[in-house]
Length: 217
Image 1 (spheres, rainbow, N blue to C red):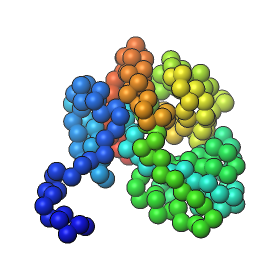
Image 2 (tube, helix red, strand yellow):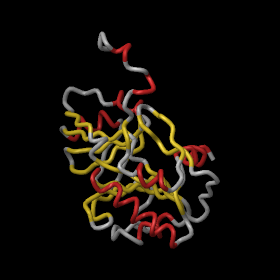
Image 3 (spheres, rainbow, N blue to C red):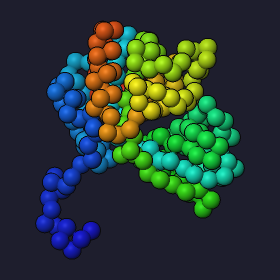
Image 4 (cartoon, rainbow, N blue to C red):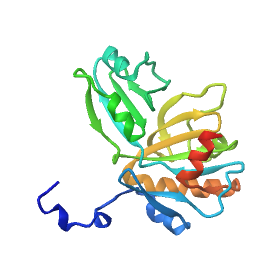
């Protein structure tokens, strides 16, 4: 802490903010501080129903570079292109044999500790949005050509490609939950596209608390 740190009230310290925050606020989101981020935690009376979506831009995103064997050590599992591995509280998503995208909570950072692996924090380089519910795959199909039908994209599938006509990634987190990522500057655009498509399916936004309840169910 700076010697002048006592002059800055805790409540006045800057929070990190998602590029989707403005639209979430307009949709009625209630926000709370979570791990240094201003996170939309609820939208009043929420109902996932057939489909819903949630801003996940605040999750930790690390890009790891190194030899395949070193990346496997850090992930705690063998890595195969096209398939992400869930380990140490994070998803380990191979982009190339020597490049892995790690997605997780702040505690997952501790798992990345290998001198053979270079780490680049891309948390504020990639915006992320979760699509949830029985209609999650249909929702994605409304704005993305990446094939996530269960027969070709089981749980753990990780696909780079065009997401809403911009380069991005799609991760199949479980049977009823997908995660779409695009460049940070296009986060608001992605939110608008997803909100429009979800509305046509009778869905809308939910907050982080609804996701946590769904994970525990």
